Image (cartoon, rainbow, N blue to C red; front, side, top):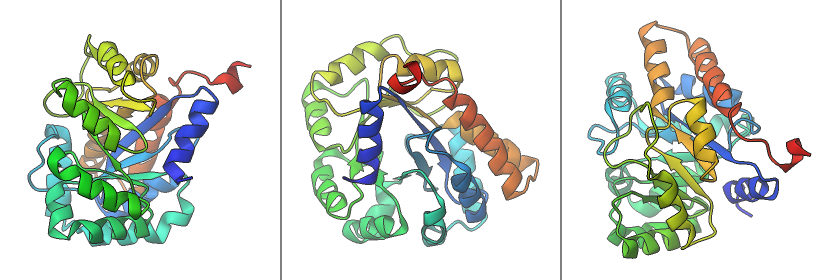
Length: 275
């Protein structure tokens, strides 16, 4: 079974929920990315999303946009990130998901991009600006490369499109809990549970919710409804602050991983822990 699918199967079997932290890749450099990834423990997170900096993101709020801009100003290159991940992959204990604009995938030719990402050790792709009409071809190529495509459902996605998205997405569904862009929020949307339950009528695949999830309390609340919580901007804000303090890669990694462990501590216990 595919590595990421195996993780979700194990979580389900033990009644546990998933935390999926998001970090900006190559920020402030590839060494910092590798330093974070090496410190992440499987008991804390099911996988980590690595955002690939892009000059014109459509779904990312100001915090992640700031990290993208700074990474690009520092000379970020996709190949350098992939090479760094590939070199360190044997020392990284969690699955990796690349979150990448379709412009980057298309420019490099989709089959070649997914082959390269898979060879570097990525376990799945999320392409937030991919049109559903073009998703089937990329999903086939990604599945063939062992790097399946995770698709996103938004609150505004109509029922017929939801069915198509759910059918294509592997090995889980990303539920975007808010319309608009990413960013920290003080409260969760009141319709989160209703949307997750509606998606459950379409599939038994795990459903992980993201956008606006910012605190351990949010993680706990989301995991009472969904199969996992995705946290991005709250982590990247800490990365931005560490860069502003001119912290070393090791210090930045400690800051990020410490917060991820705070979030993980809010995950509900599985059947093992509960006895």
